Length: 122
Image (cartoon, rainbow, N blue to C red; front, side, top):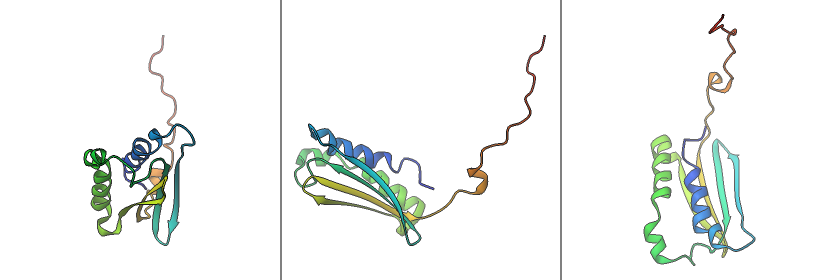
């Protein structure tokens, strides 16, 4: 199970701070894998990189990432984390890691269809 609104800010940041600044050869890649008892979800994007961004822009940003950190802390305490790193001058990766949890089987199965009811008959 992935907490609601955890990935949306990461993908939005990848677009706004990376992909939207390119004229061509853009990339946003989302991967997920299990590592031991944790789920690791990475969002990678091509763009201008972390160190080339506008300093004024950096002061305005941070709400989305702050919300991601808060959600991780709320759901997982110190077992959840967010890491952002520059893999190359034009490739940034944001990774969230948290303990794997599965939905209860009742949450995973489709509800059984009831017998059709007649709502109106002439």
